[in-house]
Amino acid sequence: MPDQPRDRTAGGTATDPAPTDPTPASAAPSLEDLAAEFAAAFTLAAPSALGASGPEIPLRPTGDVPDQEQALRRTDGGFRLRNVTHPTLIPFLPDPGTATGAAVLIAPGGAFLKLSMDSEGADVAHLLRERGVAAFVLKYRLGHTGETIEDFGRHLANAFTPREDHDVVDTRGGHQRLAVDDVETGLALIRDRAGQWGLDPARVSAIGFSAGAYAVSAAVSAADRSNRPASLACIYGGRLPGPPAEVAGHLPDLFTVVDVHDPLCAAHVLELISTWRTAGASVEGHIYPGALHGFGARATGTPVDAWLDLWFEWLDRQGLLSRG
Image (tube, rainbow, N blue to C red):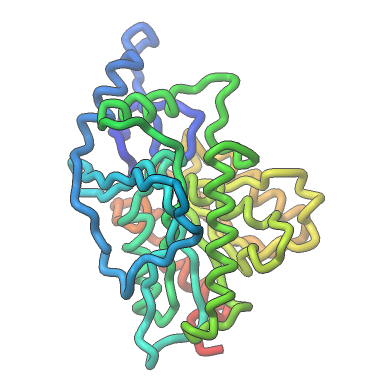
């Protein structure tokens, strides 16, 4: 779900659509105006368990790292987190009678500065749980966005302002790499505790949205195979962190969706499809018009609303919706 109006455009980041404005450049909003608009869209909120089936599962010892997490509500009701320093998995486990033994790790988007915990997280997890699949929403570490909501607005505005030396989706270093590390650790933890949850370690898939899609696609290159997804879905985002030749021999089955006019991620998704195709790996790609970026699991009234049904059909062909 986008975290700002859809009627303006910019590029260079990995989650919500950047502001678009058909007016001349001289009339475009200033960075300060954009920061104020972002800040005004959020208010402080109480923490939420989002209907999970159990407590959060820490991925790392907290040690001396302070917990700086802050929950926010958007004016449209969307639930967001920022300043996450303690990564966790949030479990959504199916009833034992319906469980298929498969699992999906879900990585929400948010430009690596916030997490869209509902439409790109818990909403998807509930749909999986209803179908007997164990879902784990990944709360991964984020870049620090200051102490106040005004600070947060300035960080978002800066992220959505394109610069030649600015690539917020570069997962090779910085806080973006921390998110990838948390994806890899989360996948390994699910496999390590598969017996406890009645899961098949070979049937652990992943889905990522926007920034989350960049993180899960980067995990394809993990040195340890237990840290890689067995299959993956990249929803408006995704890019390999290195030369495709280095991973061409072990690319997992891929499902991907993007709006052809997505100003942030369309080019990367098309490149991802081409990489899989060139390598002879299995890829199912859906290119839609009219939804732009950030639609998540919410209805938009556009053709892209079919993507969830198509993804579940793909999961069924992967063997995740039936007992192993």
